[in-house]
Length: 150
Image (cartoon, rainbow, N blue to C red; front, side, top):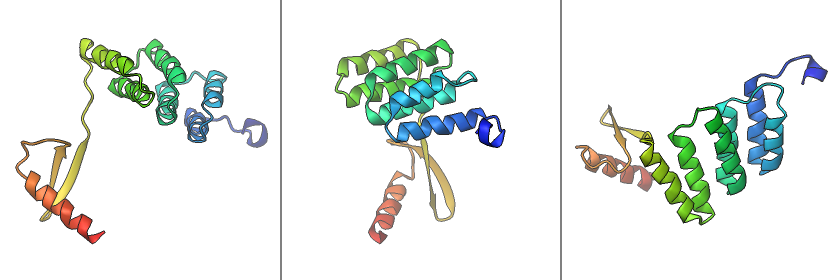
């Protein structure tokens, strides 16, 4: 890019390359690319690679990437969850337990994802599995109605 267009690539463009290598399943090349970047990779670059490791079940590389994130002191709950998922896909249940225990010991909690639904022009938000929401029945009724239309 620099040689042809005289444009210095941004961190986002490097991230796109890591994502492309990851989607193509060429995780080793993605890792080499990150290690050879002329600018220091940030947490987003490493998390992109960790996500690709999770998709493709590459335990060894996922552990290396998680270590790099730890060195940056920028780990969050999602990193632990991704690593745990890599172990689960590989059937390494003891490692899954170790990661989950580590989260508990360090008081790291996964931020739950929220869903939203509109019922009679009113927006409701809820967490998956939430039972205390008074519109749960309405939400499931609406979901059934939508699914019948598909």
